[in-house]
Length: 447
Image (cartoon, rainbow, N blue to C red; front, side, top):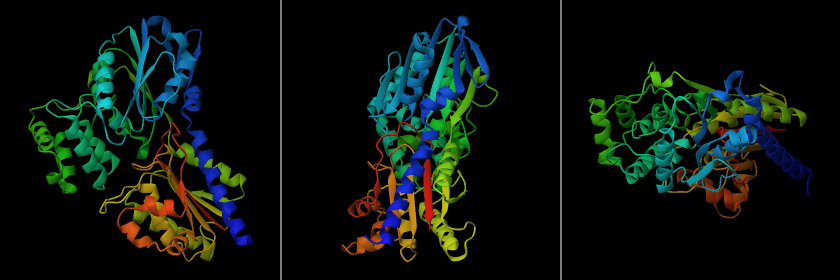
């Protein structure tokens, strides 16, 4: 084995270690214990105190990929003080719980389990009164998992609309603006259901800028969006003919005032609700940067807020890597460039993959003539698109290894078919369910 091969293997291993160190910072159990404590029957959340002697019951509600781990930590803190609870999670994202029940449902495509779970969640919420303390656990994925179609809409309508929205290149802010107006539980409607009970919302952020009204479509937050904005988004992406007619009719009726708008700022249902972000993408990046420093890389975080078309983002990242190799700017080698956020893929082919796999394949094509570059891109939830991979890890040899077996990488990229390409050359990165979710981590190592 040559020294170059050994160096490449070491760099790939370093990238994996840096990724997992980033994950450690956003472990939901650790984050819950860091911000919540119980002393003398006073429950404190980030210096906001609740005297539990004033409440007759404590109900835990929630939805998201990190829900089970968050619920587990809350049970460890509150124990038998929890009266009842239910959290909707993605299939196999589970923990052993004693007082909070879990409902497993579909993600990213909503399914009947999600509908049944959301209906039960809403009924539980409506039982709360001013002697009830409600604790809501919200994390990424909650929009798909907590599916309760608005009056006149069906699960099939929501499924078709979800597929169209996920494939058109819309941002998560735009997608969730529409989702909130097709639901009986999102866009502040869960808060309306528990009113007048006080509520604590513990939130693990998976969106750019940590916008509370976008995370899981803001079930407990005032919604600034409108039916009219939903129609504008549909027009922007030219997807009118791809959506079910029932969806369009619902949004048009809402824009004419025939359906009530989602609750807005100033509505009294939000008066007794306290939100706190327990972790976000920047926390993962900061911890990853510490690990990279320990591994003796000169490290720079680009941003935790990167969005845009995946292929374009890949081009910018690899240009920075090339600049480092050529000039030593903005960092001297060995260098580590970190970024986070969530890109989008406008689907034009019929292949299999996800945004991180597409990013990796696009990067592999750009660095094929540059030695000693390793790039890892993966979802912190352990899932990239509708696949079993978190993402991929590529280097300057990836394209040549594929071409040696007869594959044409440009064709796979054109067909949005990164998964089989990366699988063939053993460059997929699989973590399994991580039970957390703070968008994506991208790691570039240059020596």
